[in-house]
Length: 279
Image (spheres, rainbow, N blue to C red):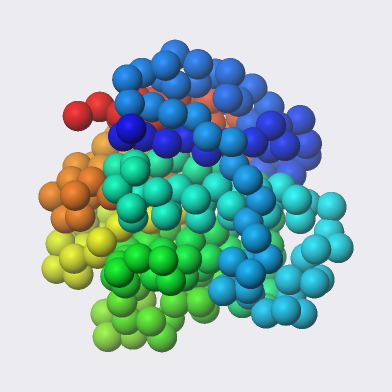
């Protein structure tokens, strides 16, 4: 099996914080792509509390557990943890993981902006615990700064975190990188920045798996609109997939992030499955 798609029916027909019900027609809209050779649809299972505690404090987890969106967030993290472990063990080459209520604004003891549990924190900690892998790269192309992810990994120099946001900054011996893409940009300008600021850095860093927090809130007409067309996002996934094949044996895990336009989600994610599945 080459490509895993991780989804749960809980993710549709609910008004999730920030992103709304953009997954209401999933996974049905991916039916053709899910039937491709080498593609498997997995039902995301809830992350165990001991796995969540690899990235969050006991008190913070207790606070989130009281929220209505906790079950969805826990399922999202569970899908990411399972996908990451399967990639690390060679059971999958790449994966697309759907996420609600969880993502890059969640740190060890706080969360905001619709993401209240970390996806990459538990996933990377679990991989390190169960395999010999220790070196990872995280690309964040959501429109906002991935402050929660940064807070978890800012002192971990075996994790390269490159975040496309609203200012330029490099710290942590070059492993914490912020790239300014605010204002209006074209698809080609954004792609050029990804190639120079992430792909070239990743080639030197040599991660064993590339994680990608892929938001489409940067699309025209979405809440983080910076001018990107909906056609950009599959091309972005293709470029990062190609670099992963060169850098880390194709080990590439995409996690859905911000954006509320259902039509954009329904355009890009089926195409991304096809890209991931294609040799």
